[in-house]
Length: 255
Ligand SMILES: NC(=O)c1ccc[n+]([C@@H]2O[C@H](COP(=O)([O-])OP(=O)(O)OC[C@H]3O[C@@H](n4cnc5c(N)ncnc54)[C@H](O)[C@@H]3O)[C@@H](O)[C@H]2O)c1
Picture 1 (tube, rainbow, N blue to C red):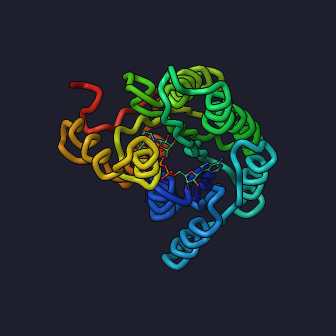
Picture 2: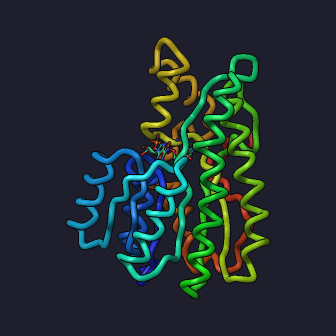
């Protein structure tokens, strides 16, 4: 088991990529805190993980509220006695392009997608240092931090910020034995992707087909494929990897 004895907090883990990663971490021996706004899905996932023998807590958490984030971290320490891994994964997608996005769209994207990654890393690192075991932080960026697209202007800005912040935090935390990396998923079939398709087009299925047409592998990624890459970054197998933006995109950014 690659995470035996470790304790992790995963934000945005009730659904999609975060949920697949929570399942994977628990299967690899980690105790997990699912920190998400979606109580119904989060509690159902916690029951599923517990039924499979995992140690798990659900924390109702809006990542844009610092107190919620800190409460999830403190729950990890009080319940599991340690805090080794943070997966900063929660985000929302604003789909509008540069000519249409409003000031409010931009501020909301920063408040939910970027600022909690900054605050979360700082507050998690302070606690990891107190625990004395080092740690590993993985932030969810995106291929949209690397390439452009017609819409999603504010979202692009937040993901670019996360990729850059990941490098800065990796340098700042290395002396404390804390590694910081980012995962840059390509197009992954999740509830979030399907919500984006529904927002941008009159015919969501046609939008999904248009996304599919852009995929070099002629399929979307699965949440489990991203979870595998996050597991690598979070585990000791990546002990010499820090400040990296690991792309898992089926070749989307190389063609
Ligand atoms: N699906 C993709 O194609 C894709 C591609 C690149 C990057 N990403 C990134 O991967 C991450 C997960 O995306 P997904 O597709 O699994 O999304 P999703 O919408 O399926 O799941 C996101 C989860 O985040 C939670 N969440 C949203 N706002 C929150 C808040 N304020 N506080 C706490 N939780 C909140 C939701 O309740 C949900 O459980 C995001 O950072 C997203 O930007 C996704």
